[in-house]
View 1 (cartoon, rainbow, N blue to C red):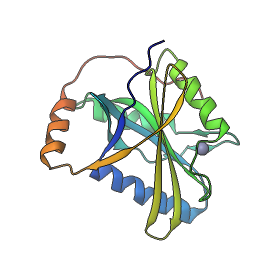
View 2 (tube, rainbow, N blue to C red):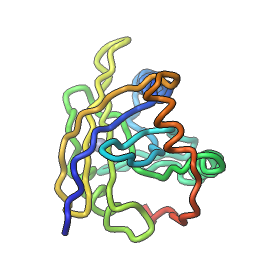
View 3 (tube, protein in one colour):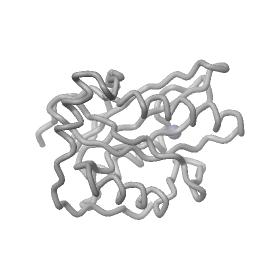
View 4 (cartoon, protein in one colour):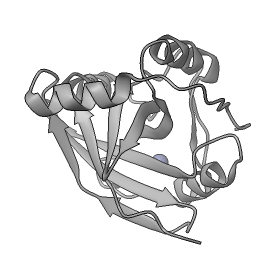
Length: 183
Ligand SMILES: [Zn+2]
C-alpha cells in the first residue's frame, strides 16, 4: 500500500469563517454535532471549498457523528454543477479538553477510506470551543494505509492570487460517481 504524501489542509477564508461561526453556534446549543467537508486534493493540499452545516437530521451517536446525508447531498449536487469537488472530510465539535479524534472517530475514518464508494483519503477536523470568539481547530488525515496523522492547516483569502489559482484548479468538472456509504 502506497501512502499518499501528507497534505496540508487549506480552507478558503469564507469556509474557515463559516466553520468558526457554526462552532460558536453549536457550542452555544450545548450539542456536539458537525458536518461534512467538500473539496479536493490539489497537489500537496486538500482544499476545502465548502464547510457544510450539520443539517436538520445530523446525529451525534455515542461513538461517532453522522451527518445529515440528504441535506449534504443537496449541497454537494449544487457545488458539483460548477466545481470538481468531492466529499473529502468531516468536522465536528468536541469538548474543550479533547482536541484528538475519539476511538469512534478513528473507526469511522477507517471505514470511510475502506468504503469503495468514497475517496481513499479523508480528513477530520476536530473543533473545540474555548471561549467566546476563540475556536480551536485540529486537522487529521488518513489514507488507505489507515495511519492517522495530524496535519497543518492554512486559510487562503478567496480573492487573493492563490485563492484565484485554486479556484481555477477546482472549477473544472469531471463525471465521477461517488455516493454515500451507510452510516
Ligand atoms: Zn469526535
